Length: 307
Image (cartoon, helix red, strand yellow):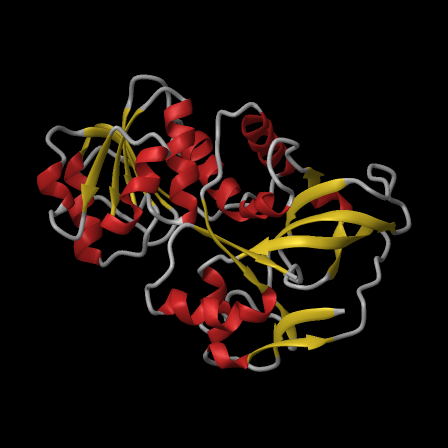
């Protein structure tokens, strides 16, 4: 089979799309014929070696945390899936950027029926992050005002839609190239952060800030006054610590793999309550170019990667 992997840490040129032995499912696993994976910006940090102290991997390493595919072989002890099932999941060990991958059966859920299987690869990592930011940590409820900082990325599209689904009023920051997609996701107000400081555009305090982008300490501090007393700041990137005398609940979260959350998101997609914004579809052979584009700031939204 072919797989996109790297043998050493470095710039995007270390990624090779090469022939490797076909994956074999072990106990508790199934073999998937991969329909698609999707690109997550954190993988550039993994590939470059920036994460080696907190996320060590064995080299060579096959990229791809998101997977959408069809079960073609069942490993020992698996009774929940059958050959022919169409599934999606988050693979914490990577490996989805390949024609086949052996995946733990208990990390997979049935794929949405309402969208193409390949498109569903956009859901696991970004969707789980958004679900947990909105419902678990942000505890967004109807009538609240929510500021989504960084709504134009892959996670942001899900966050805006889920906050709106919860009944919140959503204020979103986005660049001009992402504004149309963010508007389609349901944002009530869009702030062009390239033209206006966020603090100047938020006219009255919000109940919740959901921060999805890496920001400087100065930018993090500027978000704190935008939240009403006893409000919430949730950040999936830079930790945001309000001063001790400011009554806010601040959460720095790392999304976890949760099939119940992913299954609930699938139901919303099938019901038409959440749509997927696929910015581009690229072959696995182009993965090095996708990494280069991401590091140069030339990507937005979710990029689907296919064999």
